Image (cartoon, rainbow, N blue to C red; front, side):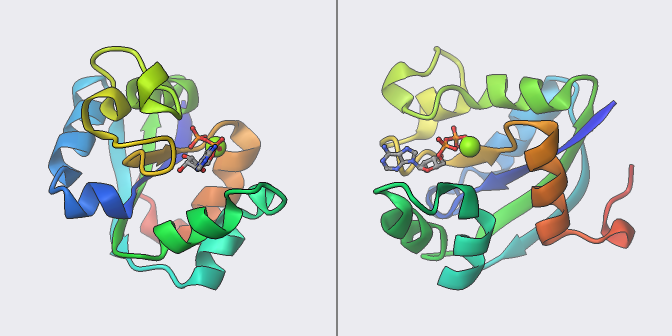
Length: 138
Ligand code: ADP
Ligand code: MG
């Protein structure tokens, strides 16, 4: 059993697809074990995405992530880290498989609706970034 961190990004909340995103996880056997809505400051977004701090898109990404509310979720299931990534689809929606969240809703490689931890190490860091142990029910 794994627990991973997912985010409905500001483009997802503004497009009114929070329920759609959560529903796709739930329909695939993933359980929501923690959830809240936040609006990150630039520095909170920088801390979340610190692994990308040297990337050319870091400024634009952190500005986007702090541009509106997000829904942050702890998701649990067998192989949840990889499973959630599969349901999300590739980072670039043009390369995402049919039926994935990003293929269906994302505008471009940056505004791609949803985040999911990419490894156990990232999941541990990212879950801790938004949730304490009393806020996760699984
Ligand atoms: P993923 O979210 O699929 O794990 P990455 O970890 O590589 O992708 O990148 C983190 C986020 O940064 C992406 O989800 C996307 O919002 C943004 N991003 C990634 N690559 C680019 C890019 N080339 N240009 C602009 N934004 C990008
Ligand atoms: Mg990533």
